[in-house]
Length: 187
Image (tube, rainbow, N blue to C red):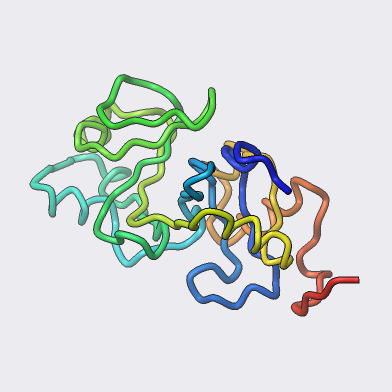
């Protein structure tokens, strides 16, 4: 059985047999994993919003085209009205949680203010909602071959095009998802 800390700072990559529309062909960064369950942010689901839309809803403004046009992701089906910013650790923002030496997640307004003014972290992605699993649920799904795990790669998080992240994440551990049957089984 997996130890409670083994999935934090890992990528969860949906196997081809995972049919849940929230997670099919998905990649999620596990932010926390312990005896209370797991919490992750999907990193390859485009929402209908741009960052300029989110900033406007918060009465924030930016004159920076790259900020205004930046995509906002669907982080998962839980609390889709709540924003999360995955970023390289830079700055002392409120409500930050350090996932690793290289990645943090922040839920506070101050990071969005900094991004809007061009003073945010060097690399960041904004997501609405998160993915959550109850105690033991993710371990069960791993035993059922629903997910593959891989180490986090900041290039995948912040640079790889969204539509390439699923395959690129699996390639981190030498897996070509195009060669895997969409049907799972146990020998």
